[in-house]
Image (cartoon, rainbow, N blue to C red; front, side, top):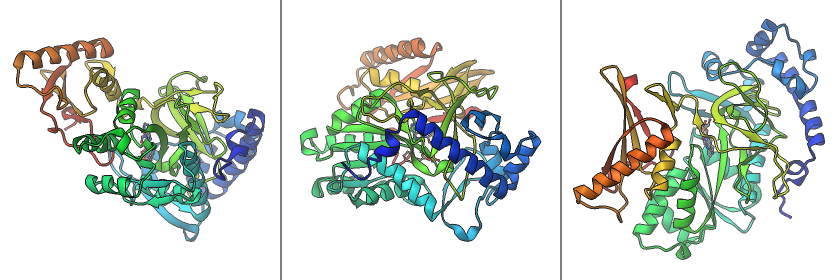
Length: 433
Ligand code: DLL
C-alpha cells in the first residue's frame, strides 16, 4: 500500500476520530488563548475560558472568525507563534480591501503537504507518476501546495505553473505526465487546445486531473473527462486554512473527504450562525486543529455546501463535503432572486455548450438586468440568424426554468471570450461600479 494513503487517519473509526479531535481541540483552544490576544478577547466577551471547551461538543460555544476579522488583524494580528518560527506566507486577494496573508511554520508546511499527498494518492498517484502542476506558483497556494504533496508521494513533479498552453501540452506528451493539477477552467482550455491540435483522448497520456480553487459543475467535469480521456478529481481548500487539500475526492467522485484529523467542518445558517445537521445546505465553517502559525477557530468560509456521513465505498471514513455551490458573496441577487453562476453553467453544459460564458449584471430604470454571453462551439458556429435565435431562445427557456427569472442570452463567436489560466472571472456586476 502506498505510504501516502494514510489509512490510520483516512479510515479511522468515527469514535476514535472524535476522540482525536476532542484532544486536539482542547489543546488548540489553549494555544490560541495563550498566543492570540485578538481571539482571547472574543472568547472573554462571551464569558468563555479554555476550560469551557472540553470536547468538540463544545465547539458551538466558540466565536466565529470571518474575513472581516482577518482584515482587521492584517498582517500579524492573528499570529499564533513568534515570527521567527514562521518560514513562509501565502496570500489571496479579497474582493474588497486588504489581501489575506496566511503564515506557516515548518510543521504547518509538513502537515499541509500530508493533505495534498493524500489527494494525489486518491487520484492514483504513486512514485511512478509524473505530475504536472499547472496551478499558479507564488503567493497563490495552488502551485506550492500540490508541488509539495507530489514530492511527498515521490512523484516526478513538473512545476510548470499556469499558462503557456502549448508548452504544457508538449510536456504532457514528452514526459508522459499521468496527472495534471490546475483550475477546472484552465483544464477546459487545455482540452480545447488539444482538440484543436487534433489530439484524440487516446493520444493524451494523462490519466487523472486534480482540479479545484473555483466552483465547477458535474457537467463540466464530464466534458473535461471526455476531451482528455481522464478521471477528474475535485480538490478544495483556502489560503486561510493552508491551501488546497482541506478536502479531496476519491475515485467514487461523490463529494470530497475532509481531512478531519486536521480540520473540523461545520455547516451553519449564514444568517443566524446556528449549526445545521448533516445533509443540510448552509455555510461551511472550519476549525484548524493543528496549525501553529495561523490557528483559525470556527472560520467562516462563505462557501455554500453540505456535509454527509454516508458511508463511502472507497473505505475512507472521513466526512464528505458536497461540491460547493458557490460563495455567499458570489451569489447574485437579481430582481430579488438568488442566482449562482454555477446554475447558469449547468444549463449551458446540458445544452452542448462549453463553459465559456460571461454573466453581465446591470441596472436599468431601477430594475436589474441579467445578460449572459455564451460562446458557440466551433461545431455549432453559423451565421444563420434564424438558427442562432432558436438556440438563444432555448437557453433563455432553460435558464428561466432553472433560475425562475428571465435572462437575455447572446451567442457569440467561438474563442471570443477570454480564457483563464487561473480562476475564471465569470461575472461582471456593473451595479457595483
Ligand atoms: O483556491 C486553494 C486551492 C488551490 C484549492 C488549488 C484547490 C486547488 P483561495 O485562493 O484562498 O485558495 O480561494 C479559496 O476558492 O473559499 C472557495 O470559494 C473556492 N474553492 C476552492 N476550491 C474549490 C472547489 C484556493 N474545489 C476559495 N470547488 C474557497 C469550489 C472552491 N470552490
